[in-house]
Image (cartoon, rainbow, N blue to C red; front, side):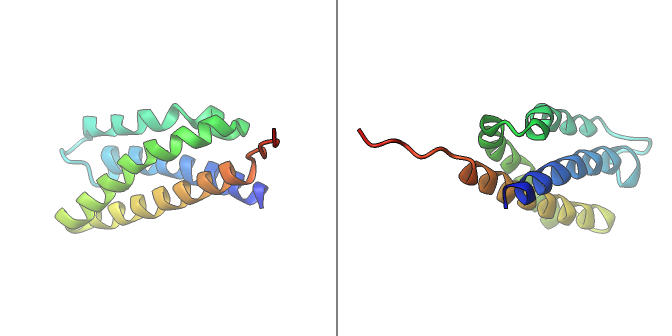
Length: 116
């Protein structure tokens, strides 16, 4: 179960980084030729090393970071049409998978407190 949460979180984070970059640079950028909005993938790179190394603390704080991407996906799925709407739905899905897997990993790897 821990391994599944580890793999799901790593895969969804990498996929979300790739989605953000490809969305704003090639697939459906706000401006032809790409958009500076592709920089939104940069904060996702911050927890990448810790997630891949299995650091529990990184799993904990990245669960809060990912909520920004979930909210952006919901807003853009609601307000945009065409390819951007489908890409926003993918962002919602990937951020939800990441959130669920990091919470599961953090819960499964917690140490039990010793009674005093």
